[in-house]
Length: 256
Ligand SMILES: NC(=O)c1ccc[n+]([C@@H]2O[C@H](COP(=O)([O-])OP(=O)(O)OC[C@H]3O[C@@H](n4cnc5c(N)ncnc54)[C@H](OP(=O)(O)O)[C@@H]3O)[C@@H](O)[C@H]2O)c1
Image (cartoon, rainbow, N blue to C red; front, top):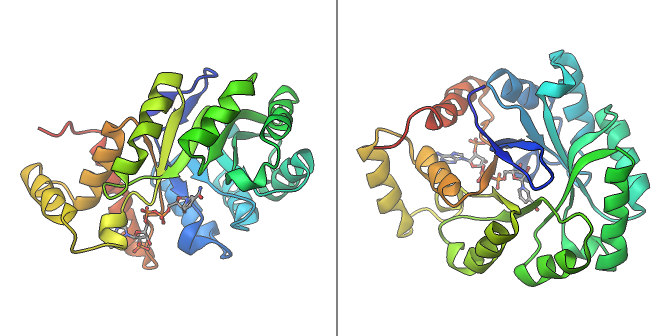
């Protein structure tokens, strides 16, 4: 497998890069892209009830023929009865458990203490291996940790060089607590804010180590101890393999 793993608080291994099926992919049939991601070495697929991509992820996983133990699936809760939402996701994914179930955003949880308790029950019932949160601020994460029996193992957040300063306290807290940060939209400087001051630094680093700018940014994410959640497959399916492979070699060559 071309990608490494990180150890979660609860002892499970989390693949350090996930193929995302949200953002520009949400509400679309992602089956072919997920298949291609699996063929390219991704073992971690990130989906969410809100994206309405779970059904296509499920079809792709089934058709891949890969053993369940070699695939890592994250999905996310978007409100309503917690157990019912989980069972709906499992139905759409055609799985008996997910590896990681996240509260997609703090507003979905309602009362933090009782809402998180329900997440803990899913774990006890074996419907999920690990539980975590997404888009939780430092203060919101601290509130969960204060009353949790099982601390969230992950906080999936937007993280890139342009918002690093505002996320630094959260990253430090997570490191101290053993909570893994997952970074989405880490390519922001390329995709949403090209022409900013980060470009020159990233391009120079890419040139120096014969890497692509994407690789440099992903290496930056990993250097902050975070896991990468990315959608790197372009509409042109022939290009995507090359791009995925480029991401893969990042972890096989130590930058000099
Ligand atoms: N928890 C949450 O609330 C939340 C929020 C947002 C996202 N996410 C998760 O994170 C995943 C990734 O999110 P994201 O799409 O924001 O992340 P991203 O990986 O930072 O951005 C992917 C986008 O960047 C483009 N891209 C990649 N390399 C490029 C390059 N060199 N030049 C120009 N464009 C390039 C891709 O275009 P191509 O199509 O050409 O490859 C794609 O549209 C989502 O699918 C979802 O699973 C979670």
